[in-house]
Image (tube, rainbow, N blue to C red):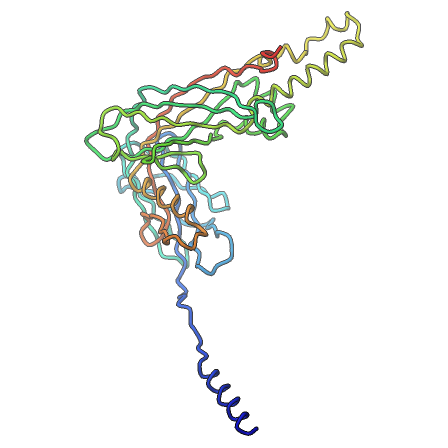
Length: 356
């Protein structure tokens, strides 16, 4: 019996001796300022300032609403003071000029001052922009999605490296916007139709063309372009239910017909507000605008690395992805783009009238 007790005690001591405390090598580092800004030749300067997060932080991104920001143009301070909205977003009432170099200097108590620099890129030339569209039935809404095929031809400068970013926005006539705003602003498809900055989803089958993480942009470099003119083909989808408005109009038109059956002919002649009299009851003009941006190399590399980071997020078998930054002593991006646009106009017809 004593022998058994000795064995148990010896085993316990041995097991205790095998215990080892592991120290995780998570060294706390002082947070850095993060600048995110893309300069454009078509708009005033907007940017955000936040701080970096530690790997063990569980909080949301912390914005910096009271940073001191100085913007230089060709090493001379701009006589424009960026204004904060109190949420970490800033606006400077100045449109950057093509060919000029801009430097941001951002400081905040408790952080190391950061700097970033970018030279404005000259826009290229769109030679042609063509496309076709068709409506498809999806879900319970009649013709709720529009599919489009596009071909974009543009010029590429053979004498330098070039990088491009493509997005699509749309627009509809003002009278349709006014109508939707007054009657149907709460419905999901009409709310988005009121937004002329709404970006369509874009798909490109070319393996050498990158796709933005949210599906609303594609980007490429002239490594795949021999120079001169280049044509890229891609598809786009509008999920807002362009034809949904006709579904609403058809409903109100049928309701009016039922009401008119109970009214006198005299009252009918005085009614000038029939739905069928609306200028967009039978068809309306639908404009698709292509935004072709020549972008800086830093912007292109940032976009590629960020998309790869998003793609690998949560994948335990993927190599860790570092997002490109050109911010000295900090993180983020100061990019530059030169934009040109072109527009295609389609006629969206009321499918109910076609059926009749």
